[in-house]
Image (cartoon, rainbow, N blue to C red):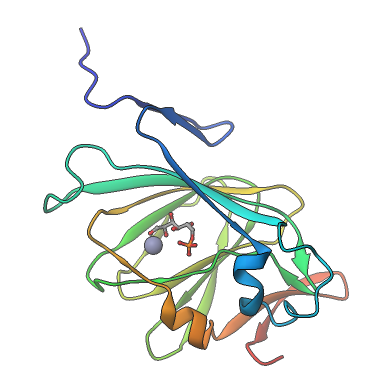
Length: 187
Ligand code: S6P
Ligand code: ZN
């Protein structure tokens, strides 16, 4: 009765993707120490898992208009006062937008223009976050549980990580006197 165009399932309660075509990658603190203000002096070990990403590339990913989707599991924790976060990137093609749908947990989505203007949006289950293709995006887990979010983006969007590695975002998300606050990059 139903055809199976590609063999993947997504569990909305756990945020787990399953199927033959699921790819997976992960990032540890050792790969991202330089992005945290106090990364160099943190006593956390290099192999501390910050996040993992599962994604699928159905059909012909190189075809014009093809879509990818994936799910990120961002662990709770801090490096000094700064909450665990994704690396963050611009899309190489600034016309390629993206959706983030938080599945569980709570956090903040940092967005930034090429000019460095930075702002934050809340990440909570039920929210639908649309990311303009020209804006860099970084998820930050401010809660005590993993922040899990589903994402969908064009297969040809491409990644510009270098700009973020060089310049960072204009805001950091930090814990200050028991509260979550946005701090200027240099604070
Ligand atoms: C891809 C999308 C997400 C991120 C993932 C990890 O366009 O934005 O799947 O790749 O959340 O973040 P990052 O910055 O390490 O790619
Ligand atoms: Zn993206």
